[in-house]
Length: 406
Ligand SMILES: CC(C)(COP(=O)(O)OP(=O)(O)OC[C@H]1O[C@@H](n2cnc3c(N)ncnc32)[C@H](O)[C@@H]1OP(=O)(O)O)[C@@H](O)C(=O)NCCC(=O)NCCS
Image 1 (cartoon, rainbow, N blue to C red):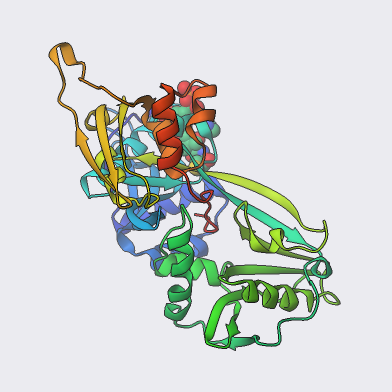
Image 2 (cartoon, rainbow, N blue to C red):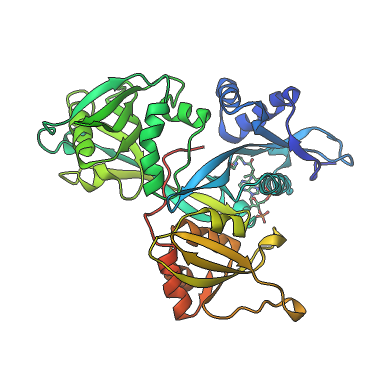
């Protein structure tokens, strides 16, 4: 008999061996990398699904995932989120519902623990879309010949300075401006900082991009190898910082053929590139799950000038508490959210501007990845013109992106 959905829960240290084998089969990740990740993210990060008592593998771990709490920023405010990575099912047990059962356990636990959102990079879409994840935002791999980035002499009132990255707190202070002004970026814990600055376990060299009053950004680079320079992390907060970074990267033109970095769709180095040398090597979409509609809508920020009321009629087949009508009252860049009482026969009394959509479509609207117009065009949302116009304003903002991969 094969494994069926058994017990979900945290993995015990004696089960990490089994989890490491699942992750190796799922992603080709060597044991050292698994151990480094568990050490960086903490011993309580691993979750597993054990085979049920009626199976011949009773109690054995047949699926695992890594989960950790973090804030993800939308509209200038942090929203409690649950990062999910390393979802892997025993190759001998795939296609029998273990992955779905594991993820249901992960989502239920995260919601009960206070997370309003969950975010992951999918290797396969159907598993997650069926669980209510929607497309949340993007992560681009950009690359360019270094000479095509340099745009004239660097600014005379700025300089590039090598800095000690052992303590990332001064980098985190700079990066906070990106979190506040962007959408979708995650506040890094120690593990995410380590992956950002030491992607292969080797520390990058970090340089701050200074103006007259102090750093206006930073750039972290791995040592050049095989005529490529990999930018591990990048934060450019001013036009001067962009010009400093352009000059810095252009300085590698005799050593490397291409410079690569991760960014969003509106990447400053791309927008200010003097020629057409840069290109997108990859564009990955991450998925977002609204775990708690009310908490998620109240936690994020909104454009300050909008005053109005919009009712969202949400359907969620996995989380009953998310199904129903929620009235958003917007003012001062915040939303107060009122679940509407169910009427006779279960239908809610929704009047005024109303949008009807699934939890997955709400995730895509919420993050600002796609506006209401295109969601309605493809049949993922229904609503009248007033509601559409209001939703377009409420969920407007920078395109959501995230350089961190997990
Ligand atoms: C993807 C994976 C986690 C799915 O686990 P699973 O237990 O096989 O999934 P389920 O049985 O619950 O099936 C749910 C859906 O997942 C998808 N799925 C099933 N087996 C799959 C496979 N071998 N590869 C990719 N997707 C698969 C299907 O869409 C399936 O729905 P369907 O049966 O209606 O078509 C598992 O195949 C795996 O470990 N793959 C390797 C690692 C990986 O890619 N992880 C995902 C990282 S985001």
